[in-house]
Image (cartoon, rainbow, N blue to C red; front, side):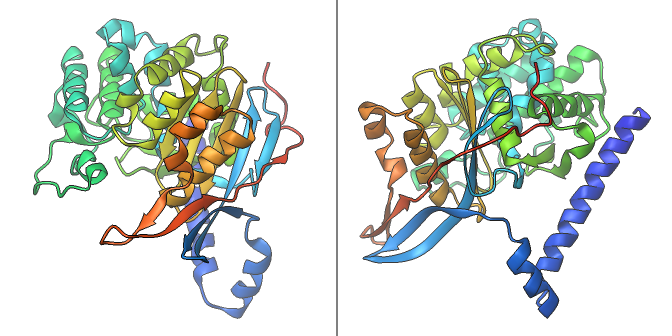
Amino acid sequence: MRGAEREGVGRAIIAVSSQADMQNDLLTPSASNRRADTHAAPPHVPLAVATRGDAVDAIHYGSVAVVDRDGSLLYAAGDPGFLIMTRSALKPFQAMPFVAGGGVAHFRYTKAQVALLCASHSGEARHIDAVAGMLAAAGNTAAELQCGTHAPGFYDVRGEIPPPPPYSPLAHNCSGKHSGMLAYCVQCGLPKESYLAFDHPLQQAIRRAVAHFTSTPEGELVAGVDGCSAPNYAVPLARLALGFARLAAERSDPEYGDAPAILADAMVAHPEMVSGEHRNDLALMRAGRGDWVTKIGAEGVQAIGIRSKGIGIAIKVVDGSKRGLHPATVATLDQLGLLDASQRSELAQWREPLVRNYRGTVTGQVRPKVVLDKGAGSVIGSARA
């Protein structure tokens, strides 16, 4: 690992510790901290409210950023500079080195399998079969996946109780991403047993891709470990929007060539592989009819690239709630003039979902409250040519 890269990772990890210390400080019930809270709290705004009868039962706060591919902040709500862990919204950029290096053609991945590189899939039979094929094409096995295991997500989506463990790592929602990481190691002759280490050449290549597409210096990327054990990074919300604007760009990237287009094409062609039945990314990309490249992330993150407009959208609900995220996402698309009557109808259940109790009785509704204001200036020091 080169000295500059080691220093960059070191600064990133120190930043994580500093951020954790700051959060601990804010949770300490001292008088000085209580005073600091009133001034230091980021200016998030209500993005959605949950009602019960005629009363407001909960308010979901957060922020929105809308950025073009040159880095201009077009619209915002709340704090577009708020630092967020990108979580699974990072997946297209984690796949970028593999695709740019010719991995898709080398291992003859289908377009559906390319979509799985970016997926948080539901562990449906088609997902498991396709991931098994990705592993086999590169001479890898499920035992080499280091993502861990969990119950297939489709049980939760259907409201069913999953069978008891053990579960296969093939059913893990990130198994497609990890299969691509292992394939990259095979293609480049890299060790597989340490593919998730921060200083592994694969993770260094991913870090460079994330820095490139978000216009964030590597040393400023705030590092963390995701739920699947892969390195993950925090960037300002507007920088994630910038990344998705560039992911959805029509022209080739100066460093990564056609890789963004290959990934975006696969995602919109096979949204069922990126997510799963009755899930939001599938609904959004179907409604977008090939124009919207979307990816949800854990803890209330949604990113969208709009290909026809050359813009990226990033949304963060700070309490991590999907309940508040989905209405805010649809309302944001509508306020940007991106929905026609048919699309509004398709996405109506995501915009204002009903709240039911355990008997199935409707007790309320979740409604969007996001209001976009015009932005100003650039989210980067200078727009990239």
